[in-house]
Image (tube, rainbow, N blue to C red; front, side, top):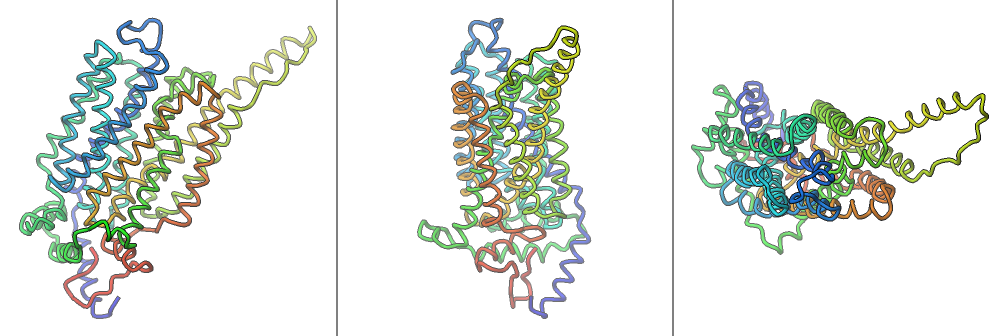
Length: 497
């Protein structure tokens, strides 16, 4: 950085020290209520499917294996459609309004499922909640990254994943005591609360500046940073970033500044889903039932949900300390080891029975029972480790990096593309999961997930840059130059924010 910019950098550091984050946290909380609904609706089939596939189910709603597979996977089709919708809405009506709009399909979907009298209503409601999930997944990370400053962007960028996990845990916990129809009623509450709160939150200052609304952008930024914050420096940096953008064309996608961050984001979304996280979460109770875990599957699911919440909290605390790449390496290794263990366990055949003499038969039976009990916990422990590893890295960081590396001029459309790719992959994998398990047992999908974790390690090593403590402008400069985050400017009014 040129020496003439040193006083300005000191002013920037001074202004950052005067930031008040309380309103920023409120805005982030209001937005991530949409992710709470996303996490809740994603795993809705886990406690519901055992009831709808049992002989005691209402004959109008009873599902065979094929119908159950569609109920579990059609959510992902809806999420893909929601991602496509967000591609248009993010730039057409803005990030905040896109998030608020997601409450419409969410509420409609839960209403259909709560009052369902046939399978079409269940599948239609599930699809609509998926649409809402895709919209929030494409819009909320971008909104958070654009209203945050670099000192807290890493931690706040983990909030969508944390609240999604909390929504999942809430569903698992309520599923222990609440009838499945009331689970649908409860699911509509967070979306309504989200809309009420977001009405009072500001739009993204970046979007307002891109629309030429300088006064509204300054007012929004001051609201987010506090009355003692010098907004001019950050606004100048954002305005410079916008001024250097051009309307993107298909021909320009061949430039590294565009195709590299888009390919990284799409690749991470694809690999994130190929690890098997969605089918594992959606079919968690049925998976534990097939694994012969000694605890009841519904309690196993609640345990996994609690561990997942703990792990994303740990990841959030380490995001701006350990860095993105270190957490991704750790995440990939933990998922690899746990999925490899699950592969071997699900492929192991029982040992031949050993003849036990009469005097020692009681002791032999006791030892055998103890051994079987101990082994029955291995699938639970391995699944807990897998979820812990995923939630430490490939869960939250994929969301965060997508919002950090995508170029501003293509951020709205590209984020929708990433979510669409993610959920089309999730649909194919979730639908195929039950077919693979029926044909080959749990061994086949677990083996595939193990191989994917190796690709996750390689992708992190080769393709993903370290964005810790980098501003959005510095990250964009990295892809523009292909070698450095440092922005070299002679204009004294422009620095990275």
